[in-house]
Image (cartoon, rainbow, N blue to C red; front, top):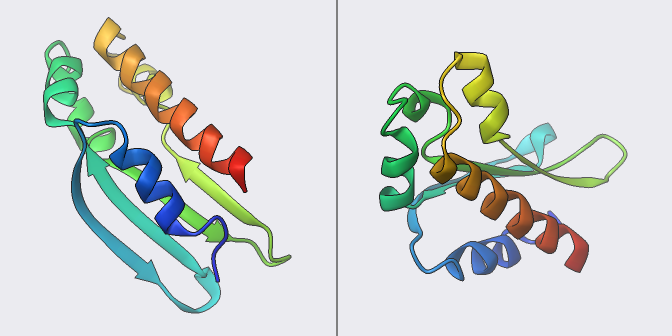
Length: 113
């Protein structure tokens, strides 16, 4: 079983209020992973206003809950500011806010485990 369970991450994300679920994918076998797809269309749209190409990498948001070969569970997600830098696009206030919300939400989930 993946720990923290995807339900704890799902609950934390749902608490954002403006989040839409796009899907979830269980990755069985040696990956022992669960991929969650979600996002806030209004905040994401504002973040993409000056850099629409961010939609390719940054939106929808993805959270990967996975277990390494030693059995340690990890939460992995995109650093939106790093994606913007990689694309050489402006880092606007809405993008900074979304990045902060995503990081703080998942740091709280990981700390609760």
